[in-house]
Image (spheres, each protein chain N blue to C red):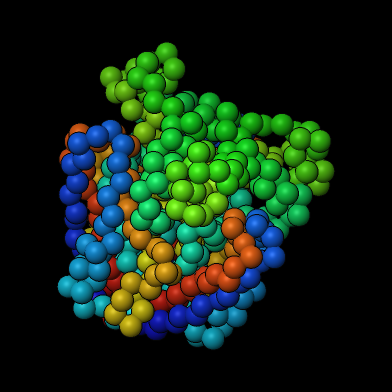
Length: 140
Length: 140
Length: 140
């Protein structure tokens, strides 16, 4: 069994944003030399996500507005108890929960086994700080 | 290490629907001859889900109504920017995000290691087109 | 390839609650003797979750309130069809879907490869009954 580990680093200038990381995962896979196996990609921070969806800018704007409706930003410690700890990012923990922490991707014949529109994104919900994403590959 | 790959195909007649695929995964596992390992099952399309919950028809109706409340269908390009691309399915991308893309299932002693009520479903949120689900098994 | 399987048991006194299970997963990993691989941890019941977030009590109270807003408890069979089956827990199936069934954790150099704040929780949404969590490890 082969294994491969890589850490990707992101510092987004805005509070909320999405970055397509599909080609970076394909690069990790090439370096791992795994032909058949599984790739785990997860945010290592609890106000960020890794998710798979469409690389369509209009949809990404829709996601931002929709997430804001389901989990509105409010820095007040009266609205969210978490913000009594000196943070203002309780909403980011909720948004990350809807969008998910991680994805598992099948590796078949040496490539990421994706459907026609599947692209992998880093999702940031409390940006302007440096965060990491883990890529772990196991297989043969 | 053994590996096994299968693609399941679905064409649902309605926009939204759920199909129990548990027995199809058990069939894949039997063909893989894996005794200890992991099974990944994921939607290969970005307006569909694979998820684990109860096979109870009332609950499935509740899911449809609840998802419609959290992520209402609206084909207008004014409501969702994604729909300016010629699609009318922005809501389906949101619904899939809540229900999830994939499940990981432990394989123990040659069977899917489920709790008493766990059943696996294909969840469709923009049907009337053919879509695929990936089954990947690794183990020994 | 090594594999390891463990079942954790929980009986929470309230309907909704969160339990930090990170140290129990680290204990499983130590017993597995796996140095490089993947750990799957999933709820085996369909009204419970396993998720990764912050161990901050205020945030946990916020999660409870937020989930209640998105998926309110209502035991009536008129509100949720699932409750016609004699249950009153339809809302718990929704809450579990938002918080997720499972997490995958990378194992690197013999330890759970976590970011600085990542902690693993059992999330209960229909407590006062005994439920199980599965821990599966594969690797070398």
